[in-house]
Amino acid sequence: MNAGPPTRRGRRPGAGSARGQILRAAQVKFAERGYEGTTIRSIAREAGVDASLVHHFFGTKEGVFSAAMSRALQPAEIKPEVLAGTPDGLGERILRSFLQQWETVERRDPMLAVIRSAVSHEDAALQLRRFITTEVLGTLARSIPGPDAPVRATMVGSQLIGLIMVRYIVRVEPLASASTETLVELFAPVLGGYLAGDG
Amino acid sequence: MNAGPPTRRGRRPGAGSARGQILRAAQVKFAERGYEGTTIRSIAREAGVDASLVHHFFGTKEGVFSAAMSRALQPAEIKPEVLAGTPDGLGERILRSFLQQWETVERRDPMLAVIRSAVSHEDAALQLRRFITTEVLGTLARSIPGPDAPVRATMVGSQLIGLIMVRYIVRVEPLASASTETLVELFAPVLGGYLAGDG
Image 1 (cartoon, chains in turn cyan, red):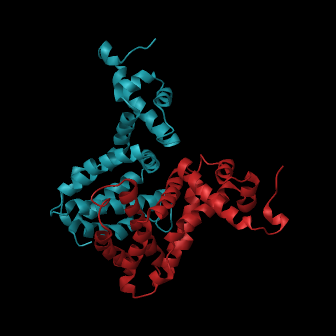
Image 2 (cartoon, rainbow over the protein chains, first blue to last red):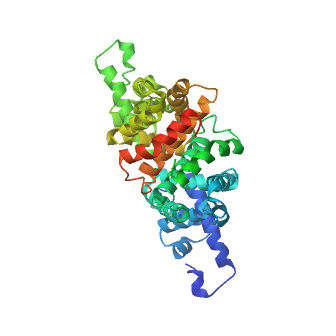
Image 3 (tube, each protein chain N blue to C red):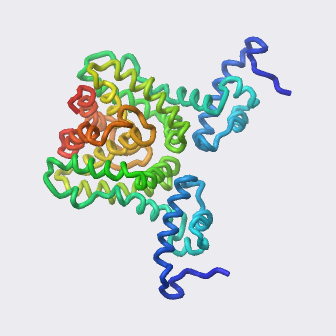
């Protein structure tokens, strides 16, 4: 009774959107149940498709998680316009772009779900580590000079993830309800210092 | 068949250690199953006591979690000897004391369990927020001058929790395997800057 993967039957209009539908469903389930509590079957049910279609597109649960994570974290990628411009303003541009994504609730929730999964499960942490290392910190490290660029990029990452923890997850005041402008005023100089190697 | 809480029957030698036994069991269960997946019953089973004894000592699951968390985070409290000494060296003393606790595996694991619970469950996040606000950042804020002491203490906290995420949870290199001395060299100046208000 299995309809088989759609590519075997040639292209059809639903194929592209089925993949997106599965990824959205995966984000919902990983957010609700965490990495360990989520099964391919439950993702398929949420997406209204057969489990074989999930296997077809993504292989294993690790594969679905990886794709759902890349989709959730797309806003966290460092954009070319952030890297362009004066080195002086790089810390502030990174921080503003970062906060802009995190202050948008529809983008924040899937990113929080990824962090929740990574904190509670080693496979998910590995996936997040790969993404952060290649897509975020690697990109950043290549755009700053010096042999210690990787360590400085990672220091920037550590301060940003700490800000997420304090502001959006544990919600410690006064940072939890500080304005974006206050955060820029407080943290842009230190990010600039990390990037310049005098932090 | 319920033996009832021990205090009703007068003091007896086992009472003090039963409480500690329950807290150790609670740490194990919260670490394994997270906040949501842990029940009073499962903690009692792990501790080898009756569930009524857990209720007697701690009331609700929230109560057990709070007590288990305080116990797990004791090493994270800011010690008087860290606050004593020159203001100049405060950032470095905080960082060294913090890393000393986190580099000790028997202390790290219960602290990681608390963070895992807080990230995945709102009740646990609330408990962690209370602890951090009163026991850690409140203590720190009172020891530095100026009206913006609370915000500066929270900035220090955000960098430290970010370091935990990057080094022990997501394990991003090169910070994951950097030596303690390297971390002090990298982060002590910025913590000092946050504390001095020029960060």
